[in-house]
Length: 78
Image (tube, rainbow, N blue to C red; front, side):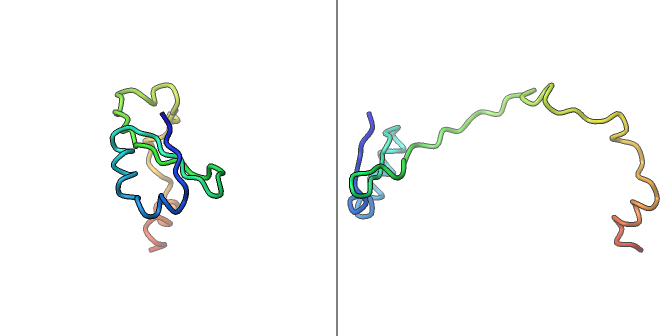
């Protein structure tokens, strides 16, 4: 269920509203009766092994040594 509060109420009861969001409640903040923002809990997504498989491709030359002129640029032109 979504709870709608006006801007003044949100300012004066922010701590309480954040606690409600932490419990999973969704809060909508309205200005002059018009919804303008949503306060919702942050859901931590577990990192999955292999998530980027097939989406990132490295060239075959990725590990090849850099040309001397590029190494010089990386070393600050020394």
